[in-house]
Length: 215
Image (cartoon, rainbow, N blue to C red):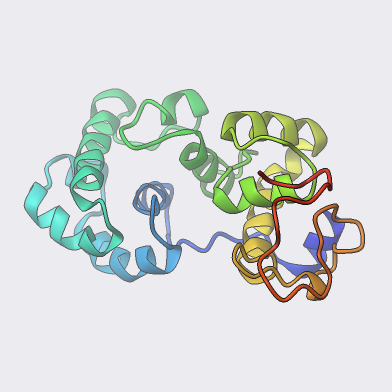
C-alpha cells in the first residue's frame, strides 16, 4: 500500500461530476475501456441530467448515444431501468448503500463499490479485472471470485484505505503490471512480489511456483 501510494493518486479514470454520472459511467464501462466511456459520456450527460431523463429516454436514441461502448442494447435497457428504479424506490437519488445500489439494473458489487467509494466517500473495494489479476500475482489471494477477493483484501486493509487501494491497483495494472507484458524490471514491488520475473521479455507466466501464480 505504501509503495502504491507513493506512485499513484487515488483517482477514478471515469469522468463525472455527480454520483449519478459516475453510476452511469460505471455501468457503461463493462466490457470496454474507461477511455471509450469518456468519449461518449459528455454528450450523454448533456442530454441526460436526472434519473427521470433516463427513465423516460427513447431506447433507440440512448442506444445510439452509447453505441461505441459495446453491448449497447443491454446497457441502454439497464440505464432506462436504473432511472425508473431510482424514481420509484429512491426518490430519484442514487442510494448511498450497497443494499440499495445492487437492486438497480446493471449494478453489481463492483459498480456499487465504485459509486460508494468514489461518489460518496464511503469505503468500498471495487474488484475489476486488474484488481483480480494483481491480487493474485501479489499473493494476496488465490481465487478469481470477485466476492471472495473483496472479502479477503478488506480483512487485510484498513477500511479507510479500501477505495484508494483498489484505485491504485487498477492504475498499476494499466501502467506497469500490464497483463500481456508486465514491466517487472520497472516495478517498485518486484523485490517482494512472488510472481515477479525481473528482466523477462515476454508475458508473465502463470505457471510459476510463487504464491501469487495465477492458473
